[in-house]
Length: 286
Ligand code: G1P
Image (cartoon, rainbow, N blue to C red; front, side, top):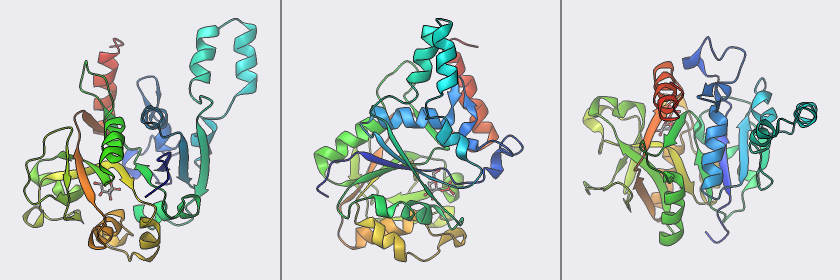
């Protein structure tokens, strides 16, 4: 891994079935959390971590996600004419000049590993890149600042090891996530430790720990050819987890980075409501 970390792949091709009927005609990434769509929160998180080259892996019916980051000439001209400067600034801040957005298509729903592989040709063979799953919002604890992704990028740069953000979940929920094996090391929040293996959605009795992968990864470009040959695994889908397990076998240093903030899984209605309530209250809007 020699090149600089600049790219973040954000898969947005999912159908959003857990958010129906909200997500019937609008992409689930466009549902609002407080005052902006989910995808805007996630792109802001990436930018704050220095990741300004965003690759969206998308599909038909989801163009609103890309449109959100486009200029809107008529609207801007109208706001300017009316002297609504603050609103104009808010609008322009969605896509600051350093933000570069590219999109690629995932033509079949073959799993997260396949979605990431769709962007393989945009990543140099030795170029590290981040993966951000936009269903999960990662926010600092109430009253605190500083993003976990930003801190994890620093850990990556200092340690030159692949980083996977994790948090502890109750044992009865391990079958919903990728679960890492850190050989029982007590991992403090804000620290990294080596992973010896990881497994996608294990049964509680087979789980190597309760540390779950939350959807923030810093991966080496070398994982792309591995993804290209990864066979369907859990749920009959091509799993990113399985490709990471293989690069560990190949000798790549892979570490779990335990987050300090909190997560909101906005891919389902309850988590999305909780995010709006907690963050709306903290913003003084409720
Ligand atoms: C994906 C990953 C899983 C991870 C989860 C986080 O699963 O495959 O390892 O723990 O995201 O949300 P999915 O939620 O797409 O089933």
